[in-house]
Length: 562
Image (cartoon, rainbow, N blue to C red; front, side, top):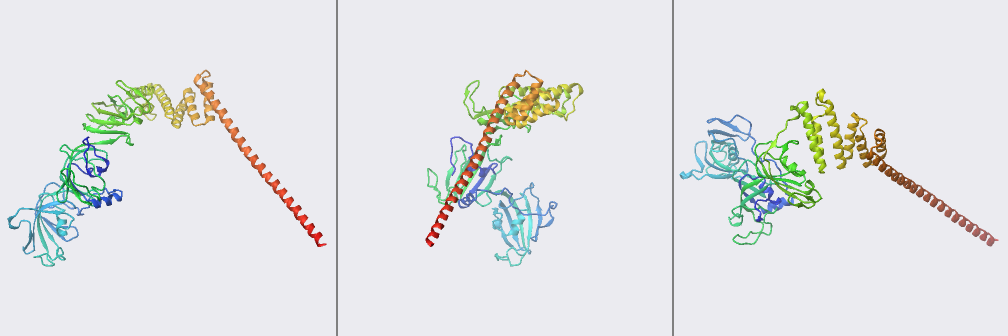
């Protein structure tokens, strides 16, 4: 059942399905029994559009023209054109005036009897009127007036007063207006009637909304109502359920298994986006910005960032104000961090309020000259170095990749900057490889170092870092080969010597484990062989004893026989 919370505007998960289709103000009918059935089926519903009549594609009718509608033998003559292009579809609720006559002009039905001007409300698809008339109304626009000629089958079964069986029927119809009706769950459990349309944006599954609502039984008794300013909208999957609810305060009781009508107005909407895809970086838009363009990677945005905030800002447009919630995995991690104002505890969830004032648009790579590409690559590399120094290895790796995109091998490079481009490219590969080692992506580190060695086979740093990755993957022989070559090139390199010493220790430990493994294997084989031999000896002894016993028994029998 709906209930208010202190915080206005948070739509809980249970009530989302009802509001996801809303754009402004609606009346929603909940059928308890059907809703229970829906819950039992998992609450699933098709996203297909409401089924409407299929009408052959043809030019619009002009006033005075006549045309057949579909295969039902219905003909339509346009008397007055309507407004716009939209037409109603089942189960919409239409308001019409109509006059029904026989071909000779005999009147048998009219909403204008006695000069009255009260229109008729018809729920399309409910069978309120003959099927032919409903099909005709589904072709009309608001304000349109048309004459429909129905075949002589319309009232054949019912035998309506004043209508001879087998008569053709004529209906002059004026479509005044209609209310859009949507069967939200496609099972009658939740039916929404749009009373007034809002802005052209529907709510999403994660969005935060503020709603006003009033819930009534079918006899118009009010059973729940939100505060004037709106509140949280919370509805159980089975409406008020089989048990109903007792009267409380000024509100009426809800009998068991009751259907209810709910008048709902969507007051405000704050779109919420799952930025990271795992609900750990969430952005809630508090104020919309201008335009559609968002910052690309590499563009300058004035902000102090964590990884989560960086990714959230990349989804914002200029002028947008947002609240960004960042879980610790995308924030400061599991370590305590000292900031300017406070110390941030380990594993803290961070909440930012961010306004994107502006960002500097950088040229696309294809718009740059060779010198500009080199300058942009160097700038991105420096940014990567700065991020690496403060432990932001993943973001540093992105900067090195960005730098390489400016000076990729497929791009045209002028002769005078070719050596500089090669130097920057190798530097970015090596730095990216270090990031991969920190991030435990050893296969990628090996790949990056191998790219360097294809160009500079004697690059000691590339050999050293590739050896590090090989050791982590326990490919000790390949690591040994790289370190041997690195020491041939630079015999006094302390880092390489230290890694080689570590490799020797690992090799000794590996050899020791191998010896123990084989020793255990041989011991097991020997033990199994000894056990088999002992078993055979025991079997032989037993056999010999049995043979001796048998021989003695035979001898005794012989003696007795004599």
